[in-house]
Image (cartoon, rainbow, N blue to C red; front, top):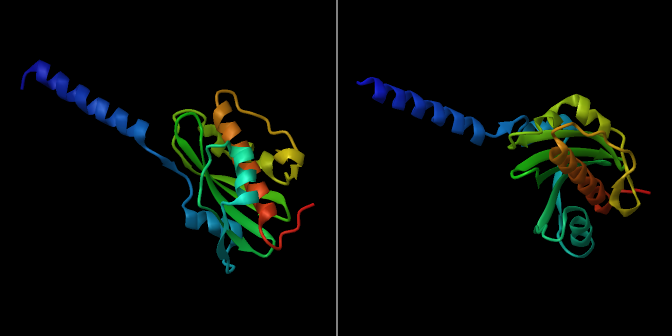
Length: 178
């Protein structure tokens, strides 16, 4: 093998490894792990809201008019619901889990992160800001969330997904939100 061939092989391997790292999804929690955090060992019911009328109008006010679904799936146990929502950060979707009880955020989690920047939203220091937040008029959060330098789009996506989960929670039958 010539020196030139060796360099080409090494460079090829380098770019393969580099492209793998760029394309890789960072999976932090599986759906099952998230639901265990939300409900522990308790029996929970998987349910859904049909994406019609009030559900559709509310979701599109928060996520944008191009947001289309058939069902808004969630899990419920007592007054607690858990939601798994996807939203584009900059160019790729972020999958988040939101746990709500009595119309307030219990916790939020990053399940899968696919972007190259903004991954700091996975840390508890950022996510803990959402604990205890509810919703006020016009589907806005009732508390401000501090951003992260260099992660503005990821932070905004987490805010929007949280707003959607709170709004959908209020539309679940037998949930009483003021």
